[in-house]
Image 1 (cartoon, helix red, strand yellow):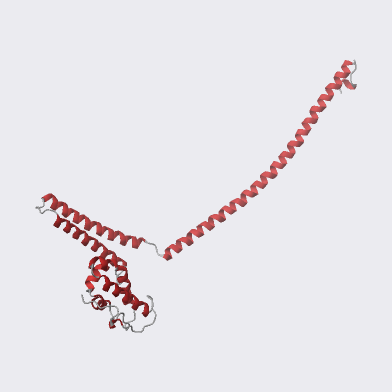
Image 2 (tube, rainbow, N blue to C red; image 1 turned 90 degrees about the horizontal axis):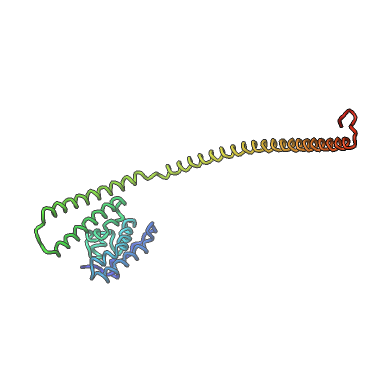
Length: 255
């Protein structure tokens, strides 16, 4: 590989104003740091580059947002950075970034991840076949493999379709806001209705209490009258018994 070291003159920095991914100094530092890691660790190529996926994504994003006249490690594009500074083709790096490309939409990255998963599965199956004893496939195995591949493709298509449906079904913030306002209005109306009912019930309760107080007062009066009447009857009977005992009667024959 013809990778340049981070101390090379190709890492000259062009001045540029601060932007979303930091300033030019930060972008240059990230580019140098990634180049240093490649320079020190490229003996175990595939595994090593995969471990640097996040760093590669970050540097690629720096190239996407930087001013046009700004250079990172002496180059203007990520394609040049891959070939000149890292010593790998853009296609090789894109295979590592597959499914995490900041230049693609989330839907495109998901589709890329599906393709990558399918490709890796096919490669794993191919490796296992190469390690197993070679023998002719039976008709049943051929049919089963075809059905499995068809099922896998159908499932991937179904997953993609469901993801689209989920995106479409997601309510917009405006719709959610309107729903919240409608719910608040319904709650306010319900609370007002309940408060009105409480006021009415309080009025009825006051009337019931007044009626109870009046009935209680009348009952007390009636009870007192009954007690007085019973007491009078007892006194009259005692007086009458006394007169009879002594052979006398009240005037008129009765008390």
